[in-house]
Length: 564
Image 1: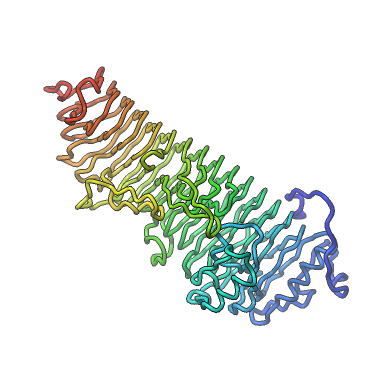
Image 2: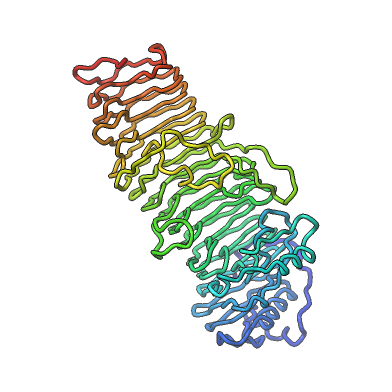
């Protein structure tokens, strides 16, 4: 089946120049075999010019498939053209050159923070439409050759002068000489399907300001260099990622917004992901924000590579949702996940690092984080750190629902847990940023509208910590909580400066108190719970009057009444 049946094709192609001697090499089926353009495919001969000629010939004829037969095709940067697909047959490998001179620097027209990284890639496309990379072959970036290639001050100064507008292009010496494997900017109708990708020097794939992107059935292995992400979707719209496998040293499936436009209308499903950092992440760079994101039916596991350059051997977050550079994260639905390992299965953060899109621009205000639903999640082997849902004073996370969540934590129980968690407003967001949290399950701070339904927490790591701590949380609903507690745990649930909380249908573990109210809490309802295993149903702090709590229809300890 011709690959362009799966692409949205509209309009006429603008003719592109190609050497006349290559026109006749079009195959009978309408494809362009790179060997007919004198590509050798021996893994030694540099085939860049031959492959580019095949791409140019296809573009001149209005588009077509450029076919790679079995072989190892060594190349530098390839520039894709409108309505051209690269198809790699079984046994074909596009092999990235180990020579930096084979990767010209390119100035991206769309302004974003990614200007600070690298302007090089093995496969490059900008401002194109109806492009594809397909087939059962492999693209290998040989990134290890660039691992220690740091740009000199002279190189950076020259690039800033020749490529960038004044004040815009300020490449970082650590990133600049490490090419991406694939970089598509401001493209429309993009398909990447079934290929295997290995060993990038930087991020494996960067899709920036693109529209209608489909990534399906790809297999990614990205270890050996720093910043070895699997996929980066950056300021794109109308994106489907499905049926993909990935194992990466850095973040696996990453949503970014390094420019002014949001990443929105994204569906991610049926993927198996392994990472030493975050497996699925929206954030870190979030200037334009994230809207209308659906994630479902994914399996997250430990990386198959025991040694890590970034993150931790067990991985950082399974799911990380973050807004720290302005912008808005809203309307996100996540369901049906299985997570094994990781430091924290879930991490949500509204911070205020306030990174700008370009140097010398005014810093953005704190962003917005709201309307998130996570349903049906099973996690095992989570570290004792705990999961954080953390906003900022005066900038709360809003309207988050967690339902049908089961998490088992590993031991041993941590020691020396800080009583006060610093805000770290402008810090890089990461699930381990606060250290070991005061709650072994969920530490929730600065949140308006939080629902925890059908939550099961346990494992080896509770120690003396409560399962849930809510600090400056308003409009809280806990329904159907079942959480283990170590002997001597002061309280199973702790509320601080919390108003409008309703806890029902929950079961107390063997703890001194099921619910502890600290600081100024009010509007607390405790109804229809089995509290018979706790010594006291609840305990009032000195700043919380007895009138703050309504407790009724609970199953109480045999000798207990509502605690005072």
